[in-house]
Amino acid sequence: MRKILCFALVFLISACSTDKTEIVPPIAPNKAPEPKVVYVRPNNVIGAVEPVYFPPMKSAFPARIDTGATTSALDVQNLKVFERDGKKWVSFTLINRASGESHDFEKPRRKRIRVKRIIEDEHRPMVELDVKMGGKTFKADFTVTERTDFEYQALIGRNVLSGRAIVDVSLENTLK
Image (cartoon, rainbow, N blue to C red; front, top):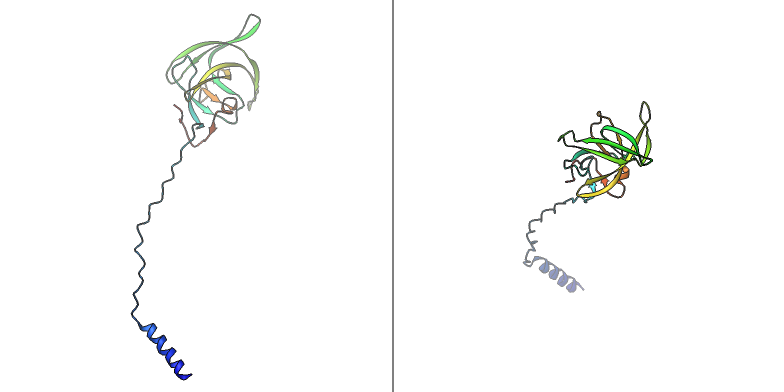
């Protein structure tokens, strides 16, 4: 038995002491750069202020996009409500403050709505106007009023935005 143990010991020692080739891990290739994440903004995402056109006028109005407003509003001059063929109509002049372009409109009054204000509620006529936003022209209801203290002549409310746009308030002037 002693011979067997000696033989096993010699075998183990010789197996451990033989020249073994050292295994060297292959050189790791340069790590590929992380792919850049590119955010592609969907076409229907608009900013807090966007250019809006009121055909037949050629120049854009900077409009405040207001998701808190139910109805869109427009600051006009020479606002008059009159009757034609037994129906209420509205005439007004729309003047682009930036370009000076102006156009006189006569539109049937769709209805008269109450606008809640801090001091006192007011009643405004509502008319249907052609609107062009981002290359698309459509009809939308706007209340019209003479309010030169508006920072923006046009306010775009939910009646225009619903189903058309998502608002990202960190953006501006995304439409052309």
